[in-house]
Length: 462
Ligand SMILES: *Cc1c(COP(=O)(O)O)cnc(C)c1O
Image (cartoon, rainbow, N blue to C red):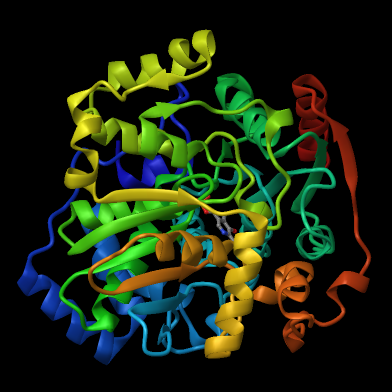
């Protein structure tokens, strides 16, 4: 399958995820050339070079045009797009991934995806309906990247009462007839399961040209690979580690891909909140998704996830692309026993050495302590998601620099910031008045038949 086909279809027909047949390798000479390119021509130019390694079949410079359109100082508030900031006299750096239109790192991939999808739909003279699930940030990021694109409609499923008022307002105040939001009476995983089930109905999927832009879309992972290269190159170090706040395993998967491509990453530090399924796997070799009602509601809500859909892609690499075994583990094994255990396998024993992953989790108190300390010591305000990563990184003794990926701006999670520091971070001017604007809301039970019926009707009418 081509990159374009994977982009448009999102999820494979059998419910599996697309992966590239192999990861392209980047030589040290290439890295040096990219360092110059980043300095002289900027993030968009680097992005086009990285993307071209994955994306086949595009005419010369078409990807370059798209990356230049996606990554502007106007959209990202800074010509660097992903500025890198040293933290006091420590070995920590902060990579600011969240200066885009909706103030989360999701914007980086989503803005490019908007360009890629529009381009592809124009080529094929067709339309598409994006059906997505969001724990809060993906939805608004997707809607802001896709609104006004005439060939695309968006249906977003969000968990009722489980996203912050600001996140909710970012979606429900969008006044575009091609965009609708469904608040599902359930948790994020229920929304994600509904999207998966809709995608498995091939007739429904074909009839409405349905695709997914969740992090299961390979195009998003590919777009995220770029900022690992950019942050590394800007740091000026020979090797670095990355600390990544992790929920659905999309962000850190891009780090894994970058490392497989030859980027000199020492450790990939995976940080979860109290919803620590992934931490459990990387420490014990057992992957045990939780029941929806056991998902903790935390002060880092975009990481309140009980099963990590992108994790399957990493397991495919861990098991040397034994697709049948991956299908068995994520299909019958999980369905029958509720977990799978790779702790006894030689691959798991060699995991840290081979893939660089280490992991930990953070509690509410840990997050607040980190936010308070970084504010007091460095006058740097970080959001509670990012704080998970800082906390976990600090529990390890890491040789060399650690680049922490900032995944949201602190004002989006003002209550937690106020608890930590005693003040509410100011709302950037560009978001003023959002929470007072009119919201359009549809609340639905967690019921596949009802949700599908509603979507079919909406699509016929709009
Ligand atoms: C989505 C999100 C995460 C988790 O990223 P994954 O790719 O799902 O691991 C972390 N922090 C914020 C603010 C997010 O929006």
